[in-house]
Image (cartoon, rainbow, N blue to C red; front, side):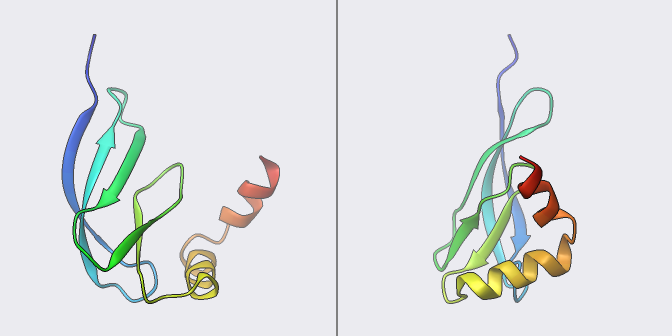
Length: 81
């Protein structure tokens, strides 16, 4: 049985682009299982398909606006689920 693959990847804040290292876990099929920033000052932005991070200083409205800008179909996908 294949095991999950763990890797540290750089990802930019969805709002301002500040780079955070993230520990990302992928299933043997390559699907995202979980992720967490390893640097202080950032937190995971929940998304089932991709590892996303935002600075702790950004509010929920800023994060939602950035998500809508970068992933326009995301809100429609969430409503369907």
